[in-house]
Length: 108
Image 1: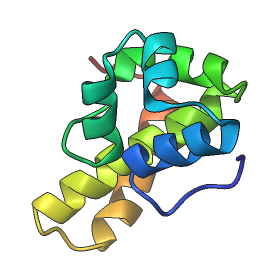
Image 2: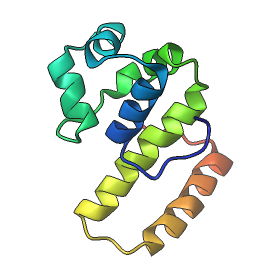
Image 3: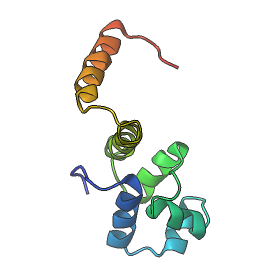
Image 4: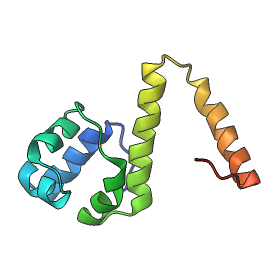
């Protein structure tokens, strides 16, 4: 599962879980969640806790950067969709990221 997914992050978690053969209860326990909340995450009714990304990567033996890419691309896509923004926003955001990196700015 190193290729980038087009699914939502919740669907991505479900795909990982099913591929690994975990039940909802088993994965929920490994992520310190209850199975009802994990089910809501997988069904896009609840957001995944960003603080658990490291744990998720560990459970599935994935590179953290892959998991972060999946998570944050989902967050960004949902913001763009909810706010009915033009896709051009992504080009401008890319330029802003490059600017921030060049200035080594600390963003809170």
